[in-house]
Image 1: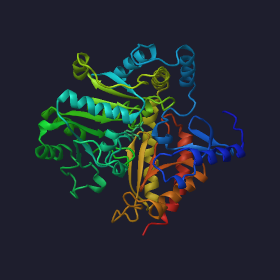
Image 2 (image 1 turned 45 degrees about the vertical axis):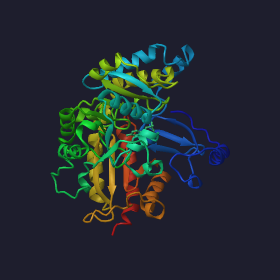
Image 3 (image 1 turned 90 degrees about the vertical axis):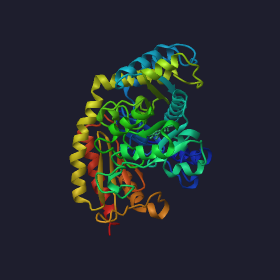
Image 4 (image 1 turned 30 degrees about the vertical axis):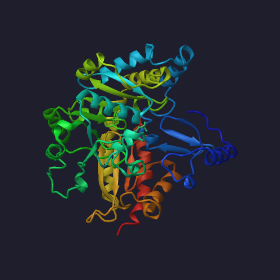
Length: 450
Ligand SMILES: Cc1ncc(COP(=O)(O)O)c(C=O)c1O
């Protein structure tokens, strides 16, 4: 365990400078009060006062391998000494090895990767390529989704983070979500929306299937509430896409690389997308990296084309070396298997919390990817925080998360959903520690139940 040195004065100065000179994402700037992080190891990070936090959010659900993994850190050091940077037109060992490794760990014939700096760029390139490949222009995306903050990706995004960026790029059409707890169409189960195929077919009838290049979806919805699709959903979407020659793009920026207890979330449903977009867990953000991985028929097609896309840092050596090391560590240390095993424990432990706490309306998830949907009332299912609720309306969940933080548990929440997404190599003891604090914090949420 690393020694934790305290320097409260430095911590205060860092926060002060951050507030004055750093523009923070998705925040009312005056309201930010960041934790000055002095260091991190394993599943914990700590501040300059020496306070440790168990990270049940993996930051933005990206630090899947935990902090300071020695193999990944070492690979970055070695790569920095050998070749710290080189342009995309060159071939480098770490980039070639990563491309090959990705073709091995991803399902089916996904075989060729375009490397980006993160998830949004992976999605941008995915829709661009889908449009060229099919010669069609529309893309169908869902409402309860987040695909990134660049122009195309934020237009694909269904949640309100899209609003300030509107009108966005043309050609994005919206499909409803398979959200069985609150079926968007108010249908009983089984419903044509939640079962996927029938809803998509109906949309295609109105849009003209021949104008639709791709359907993009998060295999398991992440920030918008951790929503795994109901059985058969993804297969039925795949079938309809095949029927009309539409590409299926699975955005696994958050759900990929073991998060759901399988290498990729699509592996839970035996579906192979035409394009898989990844980032986050690919190297746990040790160096910014994302990728768009395409199936062999698209790879075969693009080999004879001019690919009109690029980034100065595409396939950056440090990023690729860290991803190779991370994937190898996943294989050597059974990290995906651990995520699956801990997923079984979470299933039991979170169900116990649901029995005890009336504020929990539904527990959803798999692997190390769980959401607790909090409600004011289990009968009415009225959300504890309304859709897009901020300020006073968000108080029940904000107060609860602050309480957890004071007890040393870092949680991420989105409106009325509390996310439980620790690093995938979490131990049973750490899991129990987090669940105990969560249990305590949920008593605060219970106070708002009517
Ligand atoms: C599902 C999903 N797609 C795309 C993105 C965007 O990734 P990035 O922030 O690396 O651009 C995110 C980020 O949270 C995400 O969760």
